[in-house]
Length: 413
Image 1 (cartoon, rainbow, N blue to C red):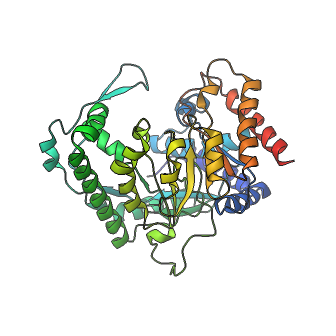
Image 2 (image 1 turned 135 degrees about the vertical axis):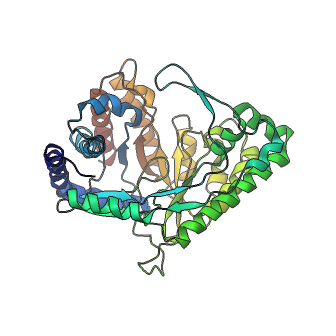
């Protein structure tokens, strides 16, 4: 990976700007607040903004100036950090580092995702079940992990040469660990068959879930044997929003050489199970997720599914710390149950960034959550995400964060 003078100069200039931002005293203060927050020692509300799908409107790839395609990817990553710092009044920490991920892959589960996409850009898709006949379960296999050490060393060396004197180049193996069992089952059977199976073929569902759990356990053991696990008690993205900053990990006995599951955060989610009763959710999914989360030091649960009626099962998960409260959740009910014992990871409704931007409505919406969670002593974080479009009005993100910041400051007074 050798870039021409133009690309190299541009990337190094962006990296220097990132380093300057990272050196600002506010970053050390944000990091301190996140450590207190994730360790449940502070009830000061925290906020993060993840534009996700809207990035194509905020910072389009076409705006990148590098010539080489890989250089353009690096350029975008650095530019996105700077854009977020300059536009969002959230609590994101900018670190003076470049993280290179180890070249790790696997042989797969014996199937490929079969999806029919609509003609609409970023539109919906239909799932073609891989297991059209339940007898086809025999086609599944356990994945074998593949670690390309030479490719990893090459990538690290290239980034060290490019930016190593400006940013700390860090190698990470498996740092973000999240389990999606219901999504896997969906790929195998499709949505309608998944729900029918839970009524008409209960033993089959248990057979598949047990198989998936065994496979994931086997993968984890391979990561351990290959020494590929990396600490994620830092700015690593966790669960469905949030970061890993905490002084409660790694666990006692960590030798600094080999990371154990107990030294890490992990998470699970089950969006496809949103319409399923707590009893069925517990039987067909949560008991299996418990087995996968058990080895880890701290865990998170949930994404866009409404967990309001399932919180008793959620808080019974091993080492649970971060609980997602989706846009569809009953905020009052969640606050009363979670209190200050777990991170209340609130996902405000992303639809507020489309259509008519109602500043007063957004203010009242955020204020209600702040007042309810404050009344119950909750450890609140606002995670604005799943924003697939802002209808080409990037200023709406700026306005939303300004409103949220003002309301946070008002609540803290």
